[in-house]
Image 1 (cartoon, rainbow, N blue to C red):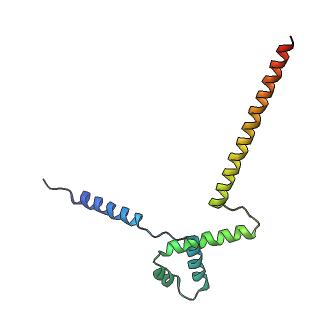
Image 2 (cartoon, one colour; image 1 turned 90 degrees about the vertical axis):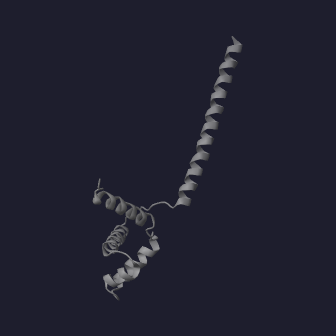
Amino acid sequence: MRQKPGTKRSHGEKVVKDIRRATRKQYSAEEKIRIVLDGLKGEDSIAELCRREGIAQSLYYSWSKEFLEAGKKRLAGDTARAATSTEVKDLRREARDLKEVVAEQALELRLLKKSMIADGDDDE
């Protein structure tokens, strides 16, 4: 029996697509900003810039839109920002320490109440 040519090719295409996805270059925020600013300078065309950087024009335009929207929000007074990982770790550590203090105080209060009840029972 003959195999269907479409099934083998589609499986191969899926493998290639998965490999490309796994080896895709990840751009840092600084690299994205540099590329968008280069495009905004207008020294080279967007097509030339994207070719040189190895990105699709649609990706450049989405980065550009995100960049300009973030700037617009910041200028409008929206100062909320994402916390850095070190800030998150510090806040989690502080929350854990505070929970321990509260737990210790609750235990101490419970022990004091029990001792007060026990002292009251002895008087009877």
